[in-house]
Length: 260
Ligand SMILES: Cc1ncc(C[n+]2csc(CCOP(=O)(O)OP(=O)(O)O)c2C)c(N)n1
Image 1 (cartoon, helix red, strand yellow):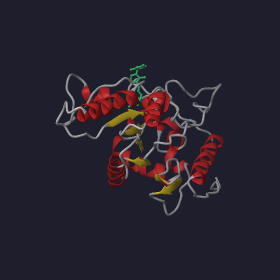
Image 2 (image 1 turned 90 degrees about the vertical axis):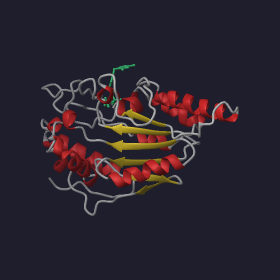
Image 3 (image 1 turned 120 degrees about the vertical axis):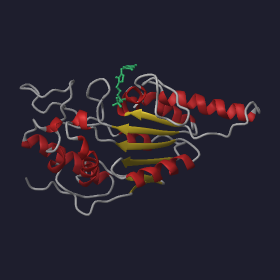
Image 4 (image 1 turned 90 degrees about the horizontal axis):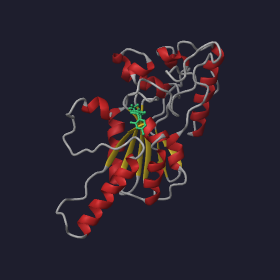
């Protein structure tokens, strides 16, 4: 979101923004929050306390940026940390990250005779990691660009929460996943309808689904539209189906693996 939006020497934001390292988005936001608080308390500024929002990729949140994110939440800074998940280190040319799904092709997880499925590891579940063990956490939700009103409402709730808030946004990437750009919203919806991504809010320690598909579709309907999964064999697809079923079960939806 940084490089693509600011190439070169300009940017699209109508409000102030600052570049952070991929390692330290949480720490940079903490510093801005602390500076505003101190300056307001000491009457060094007439400014109102602003909304402070981090926009981090999955690398900058689930992987290299995780330490700074967790520390900012532990200290209780009044910030909204948004992780937008395109399921790879994208800007550098599509390398695997902890949120890249099992079986996905990336340049660091190519499919070949030795490792036919490409990526062997199952993904890290960052929102559930953030949901536990951060006592100051005020608000947590997942969202998707395919459900924009829901997304905007969750941003507002996170900003209203007066403390560390975390929003995890599923953001399908046509280039990295290899599908036509005009299918981006469809891909976002299919992720939710197949259980590859779940929309929820954390409500007093319980996951509350904010959108529940009427019928859960087989994951194959989602992955068959993406070039990054085109090498998968039926046994790999079965593993992805079990993964989706497991994630759904964690948020309260019981699904049996649909027959192949
Ligand atoms: C400390 C450090 N290591 C590596 C890089 C190189 N780098 C630039 S952008 C990028 C990918 C970021 O991935 P992600 O955070 O998922 O965001 P995306 O590009 O997918 O939006 C990397 C690794 C860097 N800028 N800084």
